[in-house]
Amino acid sequence: MRARDAIGNRCRHRGIAWGRPRGSVYLIALVAIVVGLTVGLALLASASQAVRTEGALRDQGVLRNAAEGGLEYGYWAFTSPTDQPNLPMQLTTILGDCVVRVDVVNNATQIADTIRVTSTANRKGRAVSLTRVFAATELAPDVFDYALALAGSTITSENIICGNDPAGNGDVYVNGSIIWTGAGSAVYGTAYARTTINDSLFAWAKCPNQPPLVFPAIDLAHYRAAASVIYTDSTTLKNPTFANPYTLVYVNGDLKIQGTATGTGTIAVNGQITVQNDLVYSDINQDKIALIATEQIKIAKAAKTVNGIVYARGPSQEGIIFLANSSNPLTVASGVLAGDGLTIGRELRVTHDPGLDDQMKEALHLPGHTP
Image 1: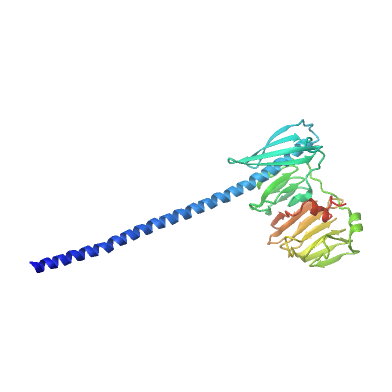
Image 2: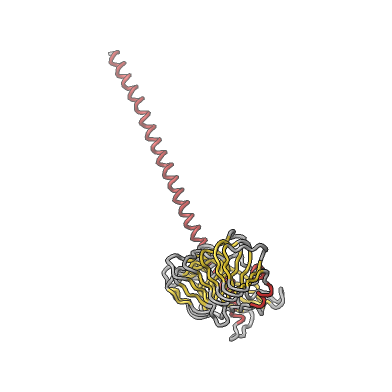
């Protein structure tokens, strides 16, 4: 009996010993499952937050551009020659899918001969409000404030993409109709038109039926007199380098140009300009080149990237921006395209140079900003 009891006790002890590891394994597995679920939920929450943040940034950009459009709408309502406005003015307009309230008040108590315009854009429960002071005699916005500005209508099935999301910098102004039917066309900014804008065009804000934008004439006499470098006949420039800041070059003939631009300068041409191949900046944050022509400015098929301020304005509206047919898009990563019209044979992507402020316009002797 004792022997059997001893054996039974050993068996019972072993049974108890074997049961302990099995319970520990279950506990570890349970902890692992809980930790895994916690990590998974955290990752899911992080991804959801990232999506919400991206959406908020996009909404913020749309609202800001609509509010900017409201500021200009308020100023134009005040200066319209068909109206005799009494201040204060309270206006409401729809820009894209934003409802914009605009208040225009007399600001003379703060600054003589000025008005103050406040624009509040509302969309999906969010709002952005901007305020700007205008001189009561101020002219319409400047042609160089837009990524793309044209003195005549544009009707094309080629894709035109102005600016980018969420930065914007894609405002467009056309003294006519904007009919861009390319499926990929988009304006990451405000599209202004003298007449109509097609419904299918995506834009952060649309402003049809606007006053005409002024396209200043090219003062050749000024450029010829002020230039530090003069070419008396047609010329070709490769890798243009401006040794001194804001060098002014005058060409009495046609210009062919390509390569890497270094420094800051303006080339005024009494004739046409052909960009034969890529024209890029050595330092996109520092360099600036302005190309000004009294005739056509042609972007050749070989050119895929062109940076700079491009302005074509002829005495009889022959200053056309001509984009040669190509399967490759043309990208203007930092600059302006402005002229009497646009002939387009390929996709165009253009983003306004955010560093082109009034001081820079004057330093570059841009039309309308010459001394």
